[in-house]
Length: 162
Image 1 (cartoon, helix red, strand yellow):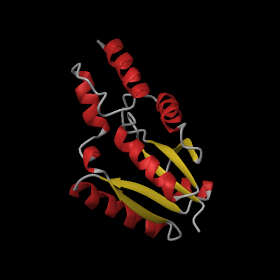
Image 2: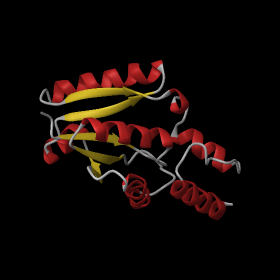
Image 3: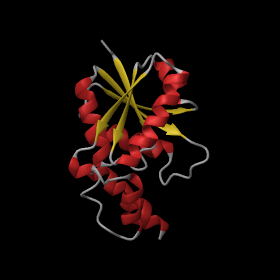
Image 4: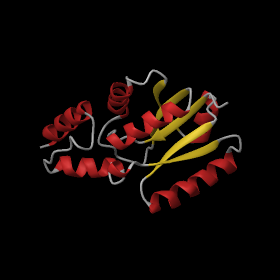
């Protein structure tokens, strides 16, 4: 029995698509860590601390879900926390090709880890953090795509940038 799974991502910002995967993965595994990967080459809209806070808020209803961040290789972080499964979401075919390549690399680096793919529900299949940011950047309503706490943070972030 797998005790701990990890759902990694950038979560910039967390969306209803992310939250759907959190809910579904939390029903499949006794414990789930939602982990923000820190990538020095990226320039996220929200800081790691802001994303951690947002994820803690939106994941609060799930008693078996923890929120964390990591720097470096995902497989090393997974080993550190004794995770056995990596959960990844799939929206479109290009996601599958990319995610399969990463899953193969992770399996080569850490054969003890398995990757589980969860397809996005139809209503979330087109939602991405970049889509939400782009709509918000132009003053659009993102409440259909992100939880209220995230929408508030987005409104604050993009109002302060104007």
